[in-house]
Each structure stands twice: as structure tokens, then as C-alpha cells.
Length: 159
Image (cartoon, rainbow, N blue to C red; front, top):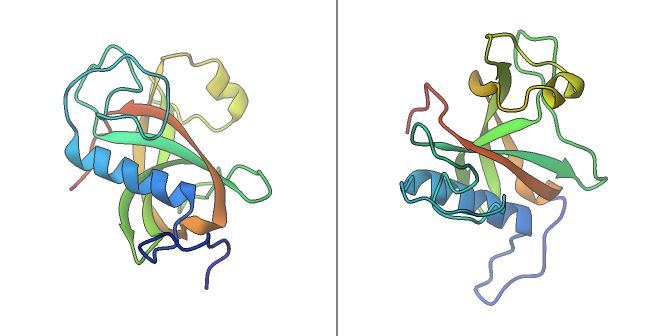
């Protein structure tokens, strides 16, 4: 079942722009090329690391947010936590436009979890992302927008 298939392309595949962006992010993360660009935060930018300047530790993740068809930010509850997070890392894309996303949390440089948008606004560059240990599987055709946030190094990523 799908909630937003686009008209088939010339190859018979039915993919929306969010699906294509997440596939591109996966390819970029897999390549993890170390060249450096001075570019904006377009999700299709290559190589990984071009969303940040200067590149510190070699990035292995393009952090992104998803928005549903009503324009609302998609957030999930990691297991055993009382807060929601909108940050994701693509782990795998399969079966046309399904994806396994790793759920990320934003953490203040002091080590404190960042639970609210107000807290996030005041952080500037004093934060990093951590894996929560949770993954979700989504139908990418159910989203209408994707916003790439950062190219970062996330510890504990297994390829």
C-alpha cells in the first residue's frame, strides 16, 4: 500500500522527490568522499561533508528531517525515552521507496539531551548527534518534503 505514488517514469519506476533525495543521501553516505565543497544545504550535494565547512572528522552521516503531506514535521519516540526527535540517518532503501532510518538525538556538547526546539535554537555549534539505537521503516512516498540539516560524524555507525 502506498500513500503518494507519482506517475511512472520512463523506466516504469514510481518515485517521489523525497524517495529520490533519501536514495541520493544513502549513495553519498556510502561513498563518503573526502573532497570539500563550499555549497548550500541541498540534499543532493556531493560529497558527504559539503553541507559543513570546515570538515572536521570525516562525516559519515547526512542528518535530515521529513515532513508529512500536511506539512507537519515527522517525529518519533525512541524506545525508553519520553521525548520525540525529528532527526534521521538513512540506513537502507529497498522495495521501490521503503527505507530503514536510524533515529538520531541531538545532544549538547555538555552531554545533555536536547529535548525542545527552544533548546536547539540556542546551541549554535555546541551540539552533536548520537544514535538512539532505534530504527524505523517508512514508506518515503508518504512524505512531501525533506530538509537536510548537517553532514556530521556519528559514532557507532556500522556499514
